Length: 248
Image (cartoon, rainbow, N blue to C red; front, side, top):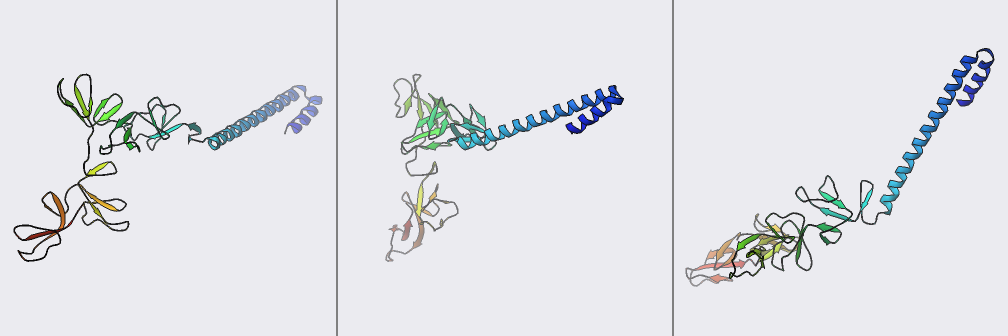
């Protein structure tokens, strides 16, 4: 294009100098436009290459072309000091709070082996890491209960200077997926729960309430009347009822 315009401009200069000047200007404009387009294409290619390289070089967490040190699931309630994704994750470079794994949490609470970790992640040393606290906050920890005990009152949990006792909800029975269940039933890997209220774990079914027959503080799958002389593989009552196949 540039060569053609130059030839035309040269030829026209002999018979029509003003027209030749116009053709020369047009030729220059086309050359400038061509250069600008070439530069834009090069810039786009470089940006794409750098983004791809950045994602390939990221050894932690990559999100929208940037590399982040921490990735934490915060859902719709947790706070984020970095960038929040549409699926509820927080990507950040710095964690000024509590680090567990490659995630950053606002609260770190010791719950012990029996305490519940509601809405958080339980560590192997029985700490609960969470991004949101539904109940009572105290010193970057989260507690289910807050009770005023006064100066002389007893507090077996965490006592504050203003004589409040902060307590973690505990479970003296069975904990599964951060929930507390009173009974459990062994069903193996492929077995199913006897009652629809059960929650299937790996080898056990967990129940918040007795799905069968309660007697003497225990839960049994079956009961039947056997009288005073019938055999019973479980617990016989004074009225001749046999409770058997007890849940754990």
